[in-house]
Length: 112
Length: 115
Image (cartoon, rainbow over all chains, first blue to last red; front, top):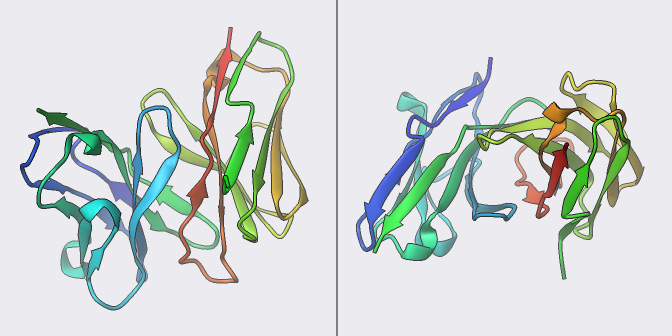
């Protein structure tokens, strides 16, 4: 069965430090992969997506993610975190028809 | 302009009542969704509609009845509300055109509290 795993429930980093959020997926075919961010009390906003082609994708707010088929991973990275990046981050995979499976989320805390 | 809107934003009601949540998208998308996010932030799909036709029904109790009057609207009616229905409900839309690969756009959510 298709699934998405985000191993880290909480991550705390200092402002200005680099960030990597992990995402592993289980899917039989070529996956469509997404990262969303949810600020407190808000809906989800798309950060970036991977469908095909270049395995390193750039997104909004300075985020990037790398698709590694051999590791079934799609980790999100940012070289320098800002206090406004504190939020919940969700990885998702397009599964089957009209269905998306979301990971359980990683809550990012940024220390000043 | 708001791409995906939901009303109301907050809904507080008592057990046993019936309530509705409305969703509208102005993106011209052909597919709309309802998600439930529980207190642990777990996001689970409930329904998916494509061109007003129900595509996905993820073992949701039949107390939940979605209705799509047209491609731009997807409403959620809940009968006989229970305490366990308390959650944040998100509407989303996407353009699918027969293949999966388009991102979803989410509404701001409706926080439902059942007392």
